[in-house]
Image (cartoon, rainbow, N blue to C red; front, side, top):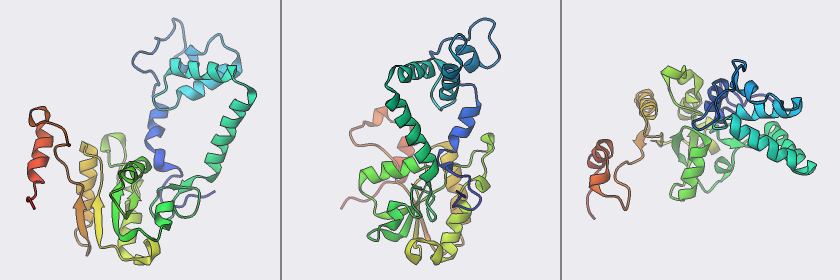
Amino acid sequence: MTPVMPGTPRYAGIMTSRRAASSAPGQAGEAPQRPGASDDPRRAWTKGYPAPVSRLIQELSGLPGIGPRSAERLALYLLKQPEGVALGLSRALAEMKRSVRNCRVCANLTDADLCAICHDERRDRSVVMVVEQPRDVLALEMAGAYRGVYHVLLGRIAPLEGIGPEDLTVAALLERLRDERANTGGVRIREVVLGLNPTVEGDGTALYLAERLRGAKVQVTRLARGLPIGSSLEMANKAVLADAIEGRRGME
């Protein structure tokens, strides 16, 4: 199955994991490498197991957040389960890889041409919120306060990690703004909401997008920041207080 977003790797919604998978999987609290082991701690941890178990441990330890010890526990757990449990997991993984893709318009994850949000005619398709990952869409949808549509960048600009604008779906976002036919339902976009994470990379990506959108006839906004409900001023850091002061609003 070919990618649906031009210049975007398939399943790039988990793009950040490709670097995590290539790094050493040792985690805090994980068992140290055994003496005399090879340079790969995953391979060292599997010594003494039958080859199929060793291979499964090595594959599991390549997942983000899974170290050798956790991978060993998962492998031994699956080994103890009825054959149907392991086969069910295998089928689920295979089906996910076969059917899940990026939405043709917004790059959210879907098993169809359009994701459920883009397909929903009740959404305000003239308002597009830009987020980093598909999981951000899920978090915002759970809040139930936003009724527009989304555009998933599939990452954020991170020069130290070798991720630039060309690695994201920025070009597809600009195309949605230039040509309303590229947007969901052929609706002209009137507002772009920058819903990026409040991190150094997220803020840098937001500034880059704001600059690229400067000449477009569209309103550019960002999510408000400030003090969370139930917190106290003395517990807030300087950045939170600065955002709260900058984003203050009138009392009605």
